[in-house]
Structures are given as structure tokens and as C-alpha cells.
Picture 1: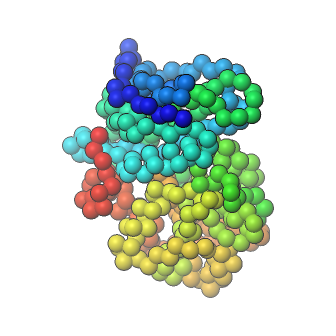
Picture 2: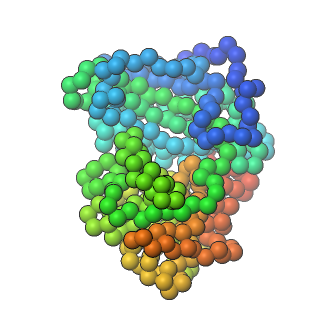
Picture 3: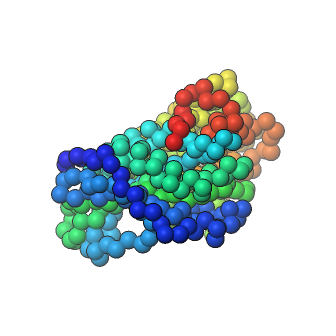
Length: 355
């Protein structure tokens, strides 16, 4: 497929803003969107001119392949406003690379860098009043692509639509989180699409997560599909385990998403002198560490939640409570990362990009 790109973005401004209708102190995550979005279509083997235009519903053919064969991918990103009212992105190059890796796996065209990165920057500049610099405020960014070609023949679409939405956000996944370790259901399998941010991956998690919710658990810790003995992800996040003073996390694979927060926390932990082991982590060693009292922490890591401590877990109908500890690795790493993202401390890693 040709990915001929245009280097000009058309802008159509909204006639009026919705910003005065929004209570920024009481935002539900992902429920409020800014005045504009970015849209770019792939038609006849070429990317068309990207357009920034007022946020509005889409009109799609009922036979569009996204509805029938699930060609849909997305990313999750954030923008931050510093005390000088400058807007910053966090490692957008990594999101861009991962988005196109997902596109390749789902037989979709790769999006040109100009459309993704420059389009996002121009969209953020237009809706910059929506990006707040108050503590905990961020702009959640949702780039996504869907198959729009008409017809119910089971083959890849010829036409696609790439879009970027902006949603102002506060903290996500707040409150105590208890998790259930999966013994039957799987998030992904070798040779599958677990490493892609494909929409269907998330739909497949809803049913087992709903069952866990009914038992009083907020999330599921996913295990490997073949043996259910290896700990892989927590809900929609990568997961870390602290045994004694060593931080453990599973390596990325065909089954595990290459999380950008995950890789950032690994680098930050090493810089803080924390011993980090990236290796398969067994359910049996987690249970053993709980019984010995050496399991200190479990926490999820992802764009939306950043770092989400886990209060306890259940395995084979036995519940293991985690100790309440001061000076936790989760607290330290979250503070270090969010301070860097919000430009409150120096970015010695070169991860932040000015809009």
C-alpha cells in the first residue's frame, strides 16, 4: 500500500466552544472531549489531506469492515501543561512506532509520521485551553484507526480512517484495587495479537473482568495461555512485583504489550538503584513470597493510571493481602515519573517533547 503523505493540515474551527460547560474538578475518565478532532482518510492506496475539524459523530456504511471483522487499533497518550503554560508530550515517538506496529499486525496501512505527530501537535495547540496545569490534570490522547471499506467479504479493507481525540483527565483507577489471578481465561496467545493495541483484545477482557467484579475484585492478573503459571499483565496494564527489594516484571512478547510506562519505570527504577529483573514471573513464586512475607508490593503501570498499587490478590480461592508499607517503590516511581512528565523536575532521559 502506498502511504503518500500530504504535508499540510486543513483546519476548520468550531463555531463555539464547549469548555465553559465542563466541570474540570469532576471529570469522568474518557467521557468528555475537546472542541476538535483530527481526521485523515486512506483511500485508493493513499493517505488524503488530514483535517482538524469540530468534534462530531461519524457517518459510516453499515457494511464497513470495522463492524464485521474488527480491523481497529488505538493508542493511549497524554499531554501535560507546565507552569509556563507550555504543553509537553511524553515519548510520542514510542506511541507512534507502536501504533504502526499494531497497524502492520492487523493488515492496516502505516500512518505517516507527519499526520500522527504534527497533526497531534496542531490539534493540541488549537485546543490548548483544555489542557490544564493543575495538579493531577492531564490531556488524555486517543489516536485510533478503523477499517471503513464497505462490504462483508472477509478480507482486509481497502479504505481506513485515522483519527485523534482529546479528552481532559484527572487521576484514573483511583481507590483500592484487588485482583484475581486468571486460572482459565487468557488475554492473549503466542502467534496472536496480544502485543498489538487492537480493539478486540480489550473486548475479550470484559467478560472475565466482569466475573471478577462480581466476586469483589476490580481487575484480573492475566496468566500465560498455555500453562496459566506465568504472570503477564494486570487488567489493561503491565504489572510489577516487589519481592524483598527486587522489582520483577515479565518480558514483552507476542502476548504482552510493550508498555511505554513500563519501559520508563524500568529505566527510572534502575537509576534509583533498585534491582530490576525482567524475566518470567511464576504464580507459584508469588504465592510462596506471600506465605514467607517477602512479597512487598504489586502494582500496575500504564498511560491512564501511571502507577496503580494493588492491595491484594486471590488465587485458587485463597486471598493474599499485601502489607501496607511506607516508602513504597510504587509511590517513589509514580512521583518521579509524574514530576518528570509535568516538567516539575529535569528530564534527564530526554523523554518529553514540547508541542
